[in-house]
Image 1 (cartoon, rainbow, N blue to C red):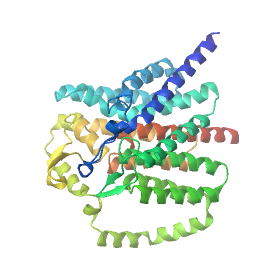
Image 2: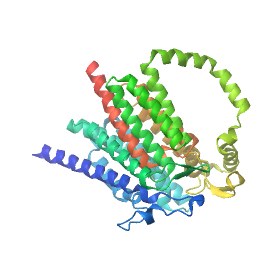
Image 3: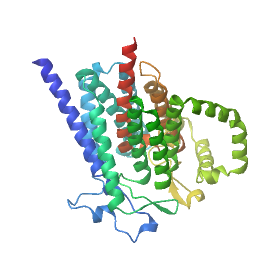
Image 4: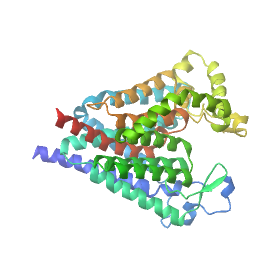
Length: 401
């Protein structure tokens, strides 16, 4: 009876978390903003809001989700195994946020927001792995239902919503919060679909799907950072299943130094990166004026936003989660972030190329942009996909032992 009650509590927690995540996805369209160049259009929150909800309704789901996650973590802490250390590190990072806020007289909630965005998707990953281990139930039905939901919502957006706007051009309409977040969600969906095709041994179908989805993302939205992340994943997947591609890839690898030399010779990297290199120089100048305490704990929420001619004299951040962590939260926080990434990467029973390349893609997006780790709604979906892959890898490893 006692075991049954524990299991029912776990099942109830699982149901609550998934329902909250689905609600978050369904109402994320309300927070889609129109750009200056779309001011003649009607926003989603005005045109498609029969319940009269606030535009931040989806974002505010975290108010319920965070305490629920923390209660579950504390309740089942002894069952988290190798994830315990990462959970303790996350608590240390929350404490650093509090210290930074106090030292710099900044808003406590704004300071904690960084760690909430970073760790809530990771907590979901831990919980889903725990749920599978404790109940023996597959994560595949959950993943596929969530993928179908995201696809249906994306199609509804294409049919009924305003076009998205990126780099002075109109693209396909979006559903999930913003064009970057929408693309990260689509990348997560496509990873989930292609991995299952791969596991079914249908390699030609997987290759066709990867190529088709890459073209869809490029011509449909042309958002570079999530597209690069997906290209890295797709290249790895095709490399694993195609001998011809392995030979071709190795030949390209031999010629890579020449291609890179010509690339850097011809291309203006600063223009290609939308002024990021100029912003990085500004950040070096900013950090050069930090004292010891500021290097350790940062200057608090908002310190990354500076006025610069790089981006039209508006207050802008570094467009890099890694730099933002350093500037606003300090070196100690950044080092713990890197440590967290490394520990999650090596947490699987067997180092797997697919699992490794997806996590590396996450880190890459946060290095050169405001990536997955600062977009929790996309992070939830990606880490749900990762949980499924993690469990699948470990199950296959155990069968071969």
